[in-house]
Image (tube, rainbow, N blue to C red; front, side):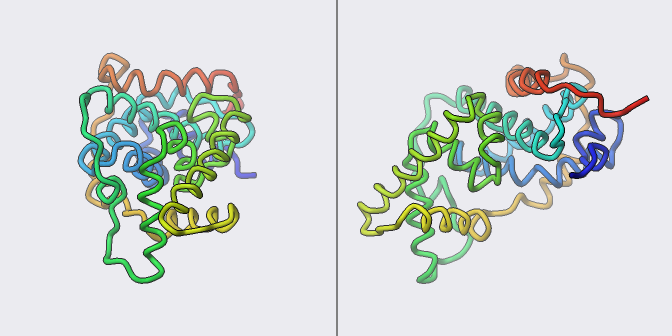
Length: 248
């Protein structure tokens, strides 16, 4: 298992001025935040704002990040939790909202070929899921979180996370069935992996560089109310697993 020192978020937690660690955090976790924001907000501009808010909140709160034995898994879950909370805060600020059509909520980067038609149906079906199920299945299969990380990100029990993921899979099978697409659960999971690996637009390189160059909030007073709310739950979860990363 990699040492905590190998994880950029752990290095940033140890030294908030480590610019190389900050750049590595953005490069490693920015894509996950981007996929979560696109699924939850359904708009590229809103998602871009949320990703920047999320990562700046992560940077400001990094000194309070405390992983368990699995530093990488804990970091992924912690960042995903901040991303989910950031998107919730963004949606509250934007209310009232108009639900976006599925093709906008999950943009396809290129014209669909025959094999891509199925992925297009799946994207549209994901957009139609209730928010709690959409968040769970997106974190599990599109953001690459395991069940424990999904539970941490959504502040729910692991058993509840498994139930939501299972219900999401069954709901997707029903929605696809209404479109004339009948899939067993295992085939659907493979299709979800296909969406994650081939159909998600990447985090734009210009955005990555802009976020890396952003000045760090000096303290909690430099954070917006939304950023404070986004990180608060993740800090509470991390506090339960506090360990010493840097032996004297």
